[in-house]
Image (cartoon, rainbow, N blue to C red; front, side, top):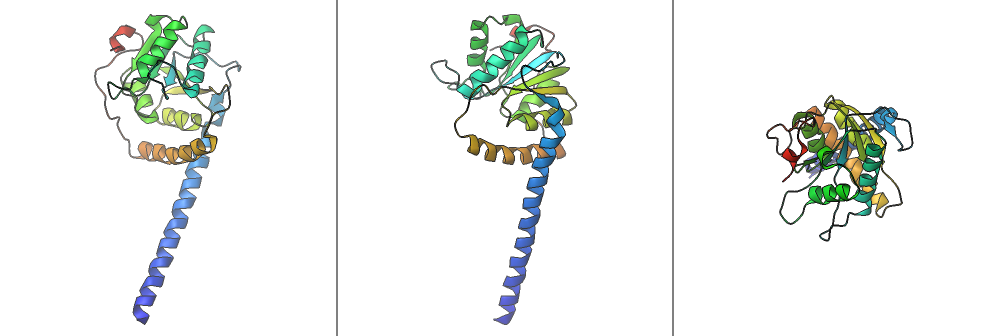
Length: 224
């Protein structure tokens, strides 16, 4: 009986110590990613250096063609960058994994309706997460330099991934209003930063790669 008690106590101590290490690692990774990318994140009104491409990361869209507030703000920010000459191309990268849900074409149609030239809109239908989107921007679309367009909470992770993959990058904050579920998004993002850190460490590859579609070529080759 005494032996069992000693074993249980030892196991509890080990679990406690491991838990402390995991929590510390979690916090340190988040602090590192946020602090290491601060100097590369800007507001839309800042005088940033022009880049080749705006990477427009996908978010929720609706069956009737509307964009969610988060996605609409990203799209409007990318349009503003394009119209001000800060980027020549816009690469839309989002989820089109099923016929019933299509972020990419919905966003493309929105950009075209806002008078963005079709020849400058490229689409990536396999951007299932931020890591995949940036990896594919580099390896499939051969993007040389880019401005990542997304919300403030998301940018440190996105810029960190781009830095780790060797893409010349800055981030532009797309926040134009207050969003629902702010606290939940922050919690989810803190976990996603740790996943991104591990993806980089273990040199993960996207779910899909495929043939190259250079961003300097014909944009229609990327459409479906």
